[in-house]
Image (cartoon, rainbow, N blue to C red):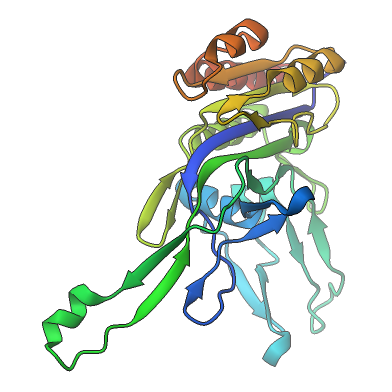
Length: 296
C-alpha cells in the first residue's frame, strides 16, 4: 500500500517565542494551564506558519479585501492558483464568491500541511524581565520620561508536530490542477529544508527553532503518531519509553534524529531509539518523499 502520510514531531530549544494580549505595561506570553495548575507557554501554529512562509519566500500570493467596515476580511485573490503559488498549495485557502460576478459560491482548499502549536515541555514559573528605555532617555537629559515595562520570559524545550497529505500536494479539484511529480516533490523538499533550519524573529531577537530532536517518517495512515508523545522527565531527560512503545504500535519503519549533547540520557536514547544526526534524518526523509512521488 502506498504511503501517503508524512508526519514528524520535532523538539527545539527557544525563549519567549510568542506573545499574546498584555495587561497594562506587562507583555504576556501565550500560555495554557494543565493538570495540577502547571502553566506551559506555546508558539501558535499561525506564528510557526508565518515564519515558514517568510523564510520560504512564499509570501507573494495576491490577496484582496472583501466586505466593508468591521466585516472587511482579507483573503486570497480568486485567480491565485496552486500552480503559481506554493503557499495556497500547502496551506490551503478559502475564496468567497463575489456577489457581483457569475461565481457567487465560496471555494475552499484544506491545508495539506498541518501544524500543531509548539508547546513548552517545561512549565512556566512566572519569570519576568524588567524593561526601560534608559539608554534613549538619557540623551534627552534630566526632563526625559523613562518608560517602564515588564515582559514575561520563558526558556524551554518546545515540541510540535507536522502532518502532510502527500497525495494531495499539487492537486486542486477546484480548477482541475495537477502538477508534475517533480514539482510536488520540490515543494515538500523545500518545506522540509525550511523546518530543518527554522528560526523566528520576535522582539528584536532571532530565536533558533531548528530541531534538536525529530521523529517520524512516511506512513500508510495520515496520523500525527507522535503528537503529545514527547515528554521530559527529571530535568532534560527525554522519555524514551513512550516513544519506543509508539514506534512498536505503528508497525512501520520510523526514523529518529537527535543532536548530540542536548539530553542528559543520551546513551538511553541511542540504545532505545537508534537516532541518526538531524541532517541525515532530513536527507533520508526527502529521499523517501522523492521515491514516493517517482512511483506515481
